[in-house]
Length: 322
Ligand SMILES: [Zn+2]
Image (cartoon, rainbow, N blue to C red; front, side):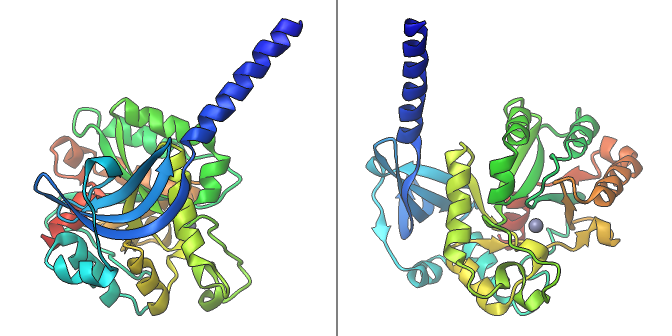
């Protein structure tokens, strides 16, 4: 018995120390540029993990994010303004500029429409805090519908920290689908807390709640994703799609591109070619999910002829600003 307790103790201690070592520390905003074998990268964050210093960076032409080990590259420090000027002609900074210009409405700021030449849609699924499980039928239906057409199926998931931390089984299930090559996930930052009070006016609600620590909301979510072994993208979705000019400028100042929607299905908006569709996958919007599954079924013949495809959010935005 003693021996058993000792072994158990060692396993627990061993597991904890391995975990503590991999945990991300000193996660901060850090701007700079890297020319890596002809690829132009911009660093957005810097952190320590497993005894190494790493950067979270974005390729300004492809919009793909990546982690870079500090020992393998040389970073030229810069301010955000300097980077915006130097790389103003790249798809990444053009998208940031467009998002800033579309920042004046209280709802649905940022990029709301995909590339008009697309035959199909870009699907975004919001995972706001919820006591209900993930609506897995969305993913099963997608994988089944596109089995011989498009593998993996691209999906963009707007994840809140509170959903992430309380739905580990669902997140693992999604990662399994990704590992199987059935879906490709773009993780959109949907803030850590996703505050909402139905009794308050929109102008004081969600991220506009007075006293909100936006830096925490952005960085804590990224850190939670990275600690979970997932790579954040450079996309951001405002909780409730609610924002104002100041908060949009703050978010783009973190290097993130706000993504709105021109087809929130549960509100009766239609999904035409090139639309950015929004449904909720957190169990709280069964109507939107039903609408989406109906939409999939009604487009079945087009899907089979590859005339109604699912588009990758990063590709959609890149194509629009190339
Ligand atoms: Zn939300």
